[in-house]
Length: 272
Length: 200
Image (cartoon, rainbow over all chains, first blue to last red; front, side, top):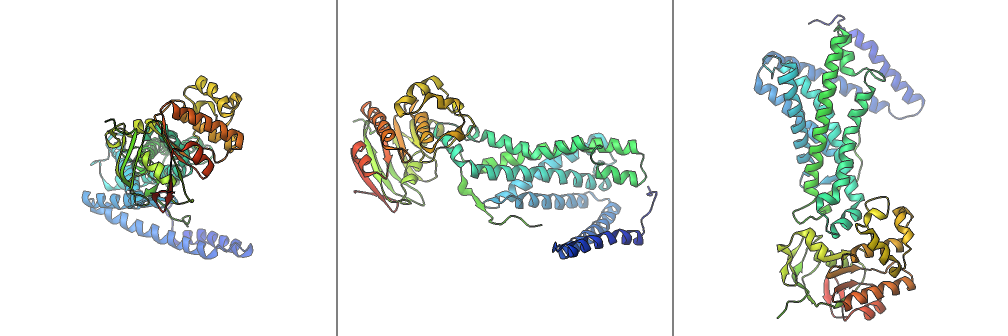
């Protein structure tokens, strides 16, 4: 389908002037952000152009192995994002393994469910549907997983005395950490609940706005958005649960010990 | 021949040991030593809170043959810094009437149980944590500076209770910085030097 209004290069150039305005604000108020702003804007344009080229090629190829490869690369990048956000790291690349496993699990189940039941393109793994869907699910899944993981790792360090006091009274590791596991899962799920409550009132979701701008009937766009919100909340729940249980398993052992020796601190909060 | 209440056999970790020690029923062994010498690590490892090598036996039964939660109920470690996992004091005590009944013997007001953990003083927390562990009457107590934050009167009350437990056949490994307490409670005495137990 052709979008109703086709954007030309000079249309984008006019919008780019707004980035120039941001730069000016940074200079006038001495925010020191103009360099970062320029780099981020250039990165954004290059990355999106690149993904545009790649998607065009992949859609044209219509090859399942290539589609799978693209999705796997996206999942790997998502897993890495989950791993590097917390200040505490599980040793032996534990954050990466836990992040990757939970992101792959949640994105896989949610995307395949949507493709085989609600959307049903023919074939169900058609790149034009599978890749964008996996992408948007992945974005939410990695957000939920990284918040939950960060919350869990920070809380076990902070609550070491409380966890071990319970262990010393004969609690199992699961009992001693139960409250912290629940708090971490809750932390992962809050954003998706907030965004569901705010949808359509506080914000028009990005996908829906994009579809409406591209000329789709608003009701159709809304139905898609509802489907997406359900998928995103499902994915967020799965990934929060997975990341919390996988990380908790590494933080304890068969003798019901709290294994903080398996955590290292990165020392520096992650930059942009 | 009956086995000792607690037998520590070649217990060691990366940071401390090896340790070999027998603790009889009704016996208290006091351990003193500089900060960082490994006293807490020693107690923690007996309670199976830190990974390591070697074996510990309770009345002849190997620790490795006992599920860890069950082991820790019998060989009960009380850390120098108490831990609390809920806001209120009362829910930390499964048997609240028994806790209230025992509190005065440790110089604790029964009203404390109705309050918030945040309101407790360090000394109150320390005695409540000890109380929590003493209530089920475990055969072995691993006590890490149990009177470190207490005034003399409270310290005397704690020592009286511990002496009564010893008289009733319970055993104690006591880490203390107070040589007087080591003499008052301990039948035997060791010093921890660089992760090894030596005669004082």
